[in-house]
Image (cartoon, rainbow, N blue to C red; front, side):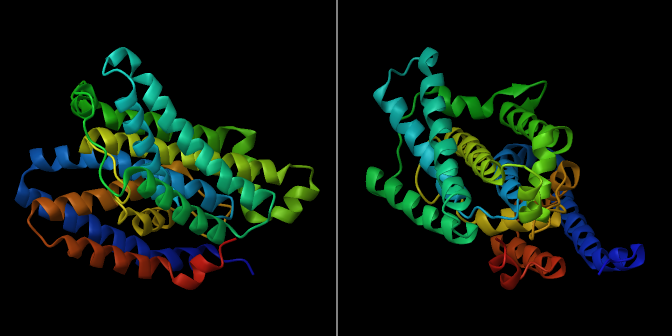
Length: 317
């Protein structure tokens, strides 16, 4: 049954109101903390969070889900950190460990895609199993400890700026634009939405839906790996378990940004707005000295308004 314009507006009005309250609360907290530290906090923390949201959003649009984005991010960072230890500390060799980290993420995502596309395992089961496997492998390799001793240029990268904008923020913006072009300007983006709306009908139309799933999970893994490398530079170390609290928040941001958890719909601009909204709230409350759990309470209220319930997540396939 189709919804009228009035029905759709009424459906999203509580969500918009909750988002506005979150934004105003974050800005008020930021004004108390000072604009300078606030903007700096947002600019340095948003890239890794934003990349993880994009990594979560792509499989959702295809009617799936990737619960292993944090495990992939941290495993990719661990691989890159270990590669930095094996290779010379010369900055000229820096691309090699970074490429190793990105390749790890792309491969880890593609393996989930293989399970979903060709073995027909439900995405939530495939990605949950991958989360456990990748986390276990990372802990086994590192003995559960953080990998440190990185070359000095690695943490320095997180502090570089371009025209006053952190370089890591520029990396995120470039990645976001590329994802936006992929979704809105390419046949792959249209096929991705079609698979999310109705995979069976899309397959009957001659589109290789298995290939779409494989590619989208590989891209999700690649974006996760990029987020992991940014965390590697910011924290000057790599460890399984970093930023695990982001997992459900990325799912919230995707749904808040207009991605249908049942698949078929998602656009870049609303997604970016949701990313900024949640990061502004978290940074503002943090700098104002509020409890770190207050953001979780606020985000939970928004999730309630968005209809982000366990039942809705569990039926994503």
